[in-house]
Image (cartoon, rainbow, N blue to C red; front, side, top):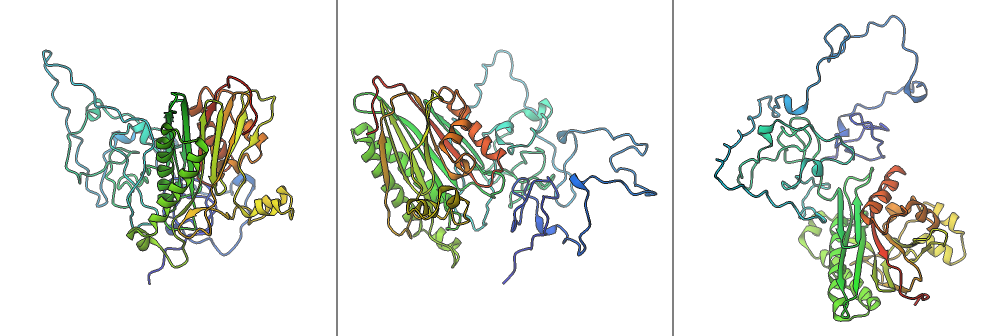
Length: 474
């Protein structure tokens, strides 16, 4: 049996300086192959703080490769100005020539229809543990670039003309240098840049609600998924729906499990509410539908191909919320959460869900304080999930009638790890989140990334309008 390449013990990626975790074989930021990093020397040299120390005397430093030999830097070239080469060193074919201009009498050609905003979901099953996806050809360079990477320079006007449609197997072009061919492993043969996967960063707006999901800074892929939508009740009153799912990393195909669950639950809710089903009953039925969708993955051939003896069946957690006129319904299985943040920040916020986790059980049994339980390394071991190997499915639902306007935060632990209490979450939510939910969701994802981004991060925001009359919880 062949062995996987061993990772060199380095704290940061030699290519992009991003921090690494123990066991990483590839850099999660740039895709650098860590198996080629030389092993750490036997000795333990003393390093100056921040890596800065006095330079040794009498050292004949070589002339920088990118200078003219007199200490002056060489001219800087944009990526599009330099010819690319393939893996064999042969020059790449030139870009296609610009099509001839249409005669003045010819009618103007309508621009291609821009892609509709929404979630983009990734691949069918592949044998690679972390399959890479080619960028959607409909995306602009700004939409397709890797998060945190500066946009590539604009090419010449001729190269900006749309390329002629090719066969289905046409070569893919790198989204970073726009010159190199992308190989089967998802890397550019010209600049070596790893191509972004479609689920690395997702955003969607639907009416007054919005959701954002991000891979984070440490994980190789995004195993979260969400579903948001709006519908109307039989009396014409609007209803907003958000479902957020978090794949269980120790299970097989966690990304497929979260995707299947979010889709099934969202479709069930959007179908049941217009028929007059009570929102709390609809949420219960949606969780059952999501469970069935995840259970079905265990019987698919893709699961048998990927599953190892130590892995469990596909599994995920689920949390959701429904906002109607004067009524807020939440439902969950697992440790993803819903928070209530009032528009008037002088009034207290609240967490509306209770985790299905080891820490929550310790606190509920009075064996540990909340601070002690969540400081334990077993804190995030979940006791409830969706999947064929779940002990017993117990959907939790609750309904509330807030007496003031606010915003409902539906999120995975990738966010609430950095804003655990209701007060901390309220402080992180922008004051204008109800009016600008997409902006608010982006700010919250950024809050988690600034805190370390150790997990996938997903959050949906649902504004709760001012009720016509006050009411207590139902």
